[in-house]
Length: 414
Ligand code: PMP
Image (cartoon, rainbow, N blue to C red):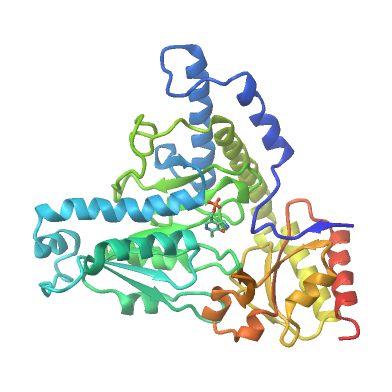
């Protein structure tokens, strides 16, 4: 038996999602920007329905949802779009006027002449699609932009105290993931968002691993922008979105693409209608599923129970291991485990029928421990002895038991 266990990398398309998408390839194929005929209107209606479905999952207004090609684009857009907007505004204002316009009276302090115009806070363990645009902008802008990369704790969490301490009078943006793609740890987003909101610092969260997996209520949590991708919640690849808050505050950012004026002139390019319909349906299914599970209590949800069964089973059959996912604040389906003294390359070779991901990255042919695992304090050998497993919507108890047996065999005699 072959078994896929890498649902944090991507998920299959739910057949219910595919069914809803199919007519939009061949029958309802109009361009939603064509407003002169019914083909265009039908496509446009489908896009607006999907926008409502996404908004419903996040408890956001549909006008706050902008469709993109996925989380990479959304992360790039949020970061580059905000910073470019602020810089465009900057020449008209002096340095001190700029900070005065953004900070409350109490926080205003006259800027030193060599102080960077914009300071951004992020973590060392963000996805590359957050880190790379920041590095690119740093190279481009030199001393006008400074970025602080906060060090996470053992589980990958960044605390509010750390953020508070790192803040300067130039801090305009915090970019911190909602849940981590390698570790499965969830950040204290509500608490952090309350603080950024009070301090008039924009908060962008890469929520790619959280959307559709854990309940999120953006009417209650004052994040300003969140990124997500459809293929992490049983929708198609190549489509995603950026939530941009429209009220309290109304967030303004520059587009990355210019052209046909789609997405209210903020993201030019013909919309991927079948993909967007798929994302909408995937959100609708996740909303219903989560509502059902919240009645049970998240911890009694079937996937949560399967994860516990797997963890307990592995404890029985494997050598001692550490859990890198936060013991309490973790995604319901994800596990990151370190087996000290057991390089994963060997275990993976013996369990090639299981689609698991090693905590190592291959650069120029040399396997090296993941930078994320190094950042949470793992030694190089421990980082190489780490594995990421995640369960899916259709994973069964029998399959979990099969994983446990496979580990028992792989570790026997070691
Ligand atoms: N952010 C996170 C946390 C992710 O897990 C991923 C996908 N691995 C991305 C961003 C990028 O998503 P996409 O490849 O769909 O653009």
